Length: 174
Image 1: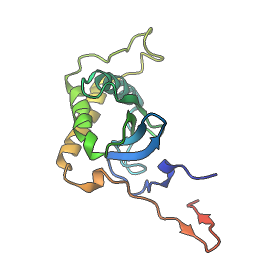
Image 2: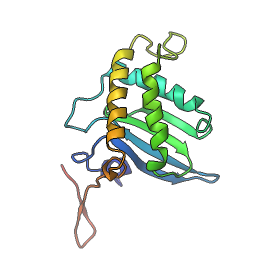
Image 3: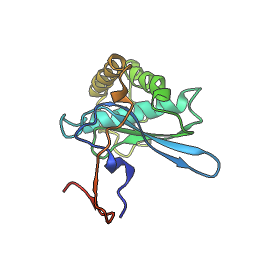
């Protein structure tokens, strides 16, 4: 099977940031998947599950209510590895083009008084939330983005180089 795009990224080198994971051209428009990475994979502890769940609710609500972006948002959700989130938007903007949106979303967490939709009727596991830890992770990431706004490292994936034989065989890490 062909290796998918997100597995071609060198996870030993990736740092927190906003990355374009893939662009899909559909009939009516393009769709871009962004990797919003909060933690260095395999080098930092992952995001606490309850905090991740709270960040999912808060930022999804923020994105889908932003007057300039709400019609562009297709999906916001956590990565299985708990090191970040995926954002899927209509169109094909660069990672830098969504910097202000992402920074604003994470900064908005600080002023959140309660997790939206954290009720038995609205959430599949409403008891698994941690607003205070969500605020801590959001503040950490927002400060990091601001401190590194001029660095290409937070916008460009480090790609894994694969050895290819003359016959076209690809060698992958085991």
